[in-house]
Image (cartoon, rainbow, N blue to C red; front, side, top):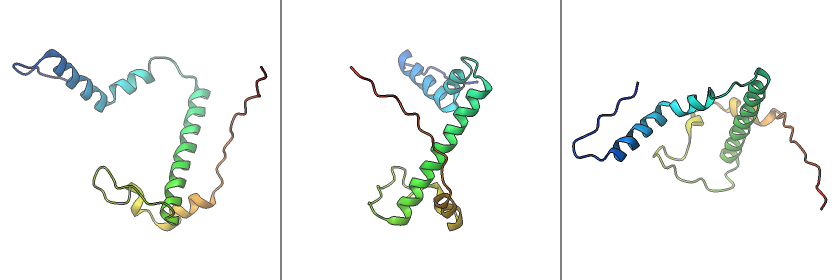
Length: 114
């Protein structure tokens, strides 16, 4: 349960802003959106599959950026240096991502004629 005490001489808007920030950090807004409507099992599985593909593609891009060194890497905003979380992964982990084909199907829209 999130509690925010209004400090002396603090405007109500500032306390409300702190409350919203704490709700956001706790993930309450995300849960409220998740349970706002019923999601069918097939839709949930489809969404989770899309998320898996997106995560694999992101990992693939990171692995390619590390390996080629084609473009310079940006400095991290958070002071962790050049690498990210997956710097400690062994080579066979990133290599398997490069060798595995990704099952990607893109919807193709019919061209509209005006």
